[in-house]
Length: 181
Image (cartoon, rainbow, N blue to C red; front, side, top):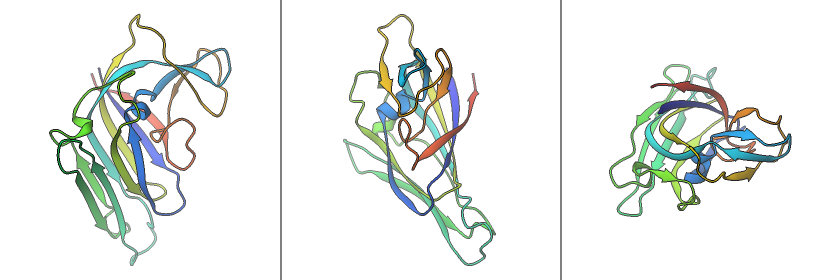
């Protein structure tokens, strides 16, 4: 299935080096268990298709530059950084990118396989919007994978996780989830 996840950056100042791991992406959809901080992951595998970011910072300023970037990391070659700088009140910075060949994000991320590996890093400011399109494989009878969040939820409720990890208040909070296929 192909899905688009939208997030907003809540940081109050320039935020560099937001590292997004395989585990962060695998924990994007989950169901709360028994009204506690324990949750069941719904995603068994995930692959990044496209990444977009809009820089909406300093919208009232005509002199401050806004810069946004994504750095695709790779174990097999050089990393690739895609960035844009603009005056947001005139033209907000915007980037659109796909994972380069042989980058960590160009391969499938599967539950239990190197979930701590960083796929990409984001640099942004408060109010920036991120869309990430992912190919998703849902669990279908495999063993359940649980993880915890800092706050408890309602039992049986479907939740969308933070892009920067469970309960990361300094990162990218979920806004919407859209089915593309």
